[in-house]
Structures are given as structure tokens and as C-alpha cells.
Image (cartoon, rainbow, N blue to C red):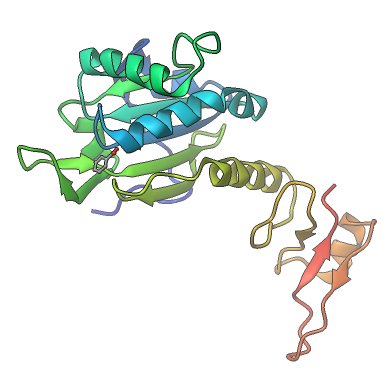
Length: 224
Ligand code: BEZ
């Protein structure tokens, strides 16, 4: 069964979270959203990840992103684990609660429905754990990006903010971002845009790289 594909409408599930019951689309409202899944509560890599997300709260809110996490344990476990996450990651004065909710999925219903299980990582009973999924959902409730990491590899949150910047830029402007792009760097003119259209859309100018093929597809312009 294929998992969620780019452009798919993201399922409007209901879930119990550390801050009460939610309906996912209602929770998202008009914002962008990121759903982070985690293999298990009281695990070391996840503890570092959730702490990092908490410390990045202002970066996410600046980008109008609602964050939600999921782990395949109970609410009781989530509340107990939250104290560890805060103690490990935050200065006492800086945060006394996580700035996002954690979904309780102890029966793995959502993990199965959203294709998030990692068959190579099992718990002590031999049941698969959740992979480290990153689902980025646009204000239109469609999947804009998904990243899938195995349980043994923690995520790079600088990269997640970087891809959000690219997604949000390219959602509003007909440009593409090159390898390792950072906000403020030059952007690329998409290959399906004619030279005439590009000249009128980017009056600040376009730089076209000469290539052995003679084809004029490597076109840069300033980020506006
Ligand atoms: C962790 O979060 O530390 C972890 C979870 C499952 C397998 C390996 C590591």
C-alpha cells in the first residue's frame, strides 16, 4: 500500500494528545503544520529531538507553523517523559512545558494509517516502532514534503527550517531553490518558464550559465 504522496490531502484524523483531543485539520487552522513521529517514549535520540523542537519554538511560530509530535505510547507515558525532556533540554527559567502537543498512539492506529512504522526497529515484544517521519502540510491541508528517517538517526532541524523556507518561498513565487540554498541566496528560474516570461517576471535580471550543451536552463535570479 503506498503511503502518503506529495500533493495528497492529509488525513483529518482525531487523536488524544497531551493537551486534549484534537481534530487535525481544525488544529492546523490556516497555518502550515509539521507532524514529527517518534519511535518510543523514554528513548535518548527522541529526547534530544523534542528538546530541540522546543528550543526552536520561535523559529516555527515566525514561519506560521503548528507543530505536533506523535509517539506510540500512552498519555501517561508522554506526561512522564515530558518532564525528562524539559529537564534535559531546557534551562529551568526558559520553559516549564513543551510548546507543542504529543499524540498518544499506543495502539499504533495512526502509525499504520499514515505509513509510519519502521519494520527494522522493534520493541521488546517484537512490535515495530515508528520511524522518524517529518510531514510538512500546507495551509491547503496537502502534503508538501515528507522525510523518513530510521529510528537510529536523529533529524537535522536546521535542514527542516531550511526546507520550510524553500517551501514557503516557492509556494508564493515561481522560483526553485538550488542545492544547499539558504534564504537570501539567489534562486533559480524554473525550467518550464519561457525566456520572455522570465524577463517580465524578474526585471532585476537573470544570469544564465553557459553550458557545453548550449542549452539555457541554468538560470539564476535574485530572491525578491
Ligand atoms: C531513540 O530514540 O533513542 C531510539 C529509539 C529507537 C531505536 C533506537 C533509538
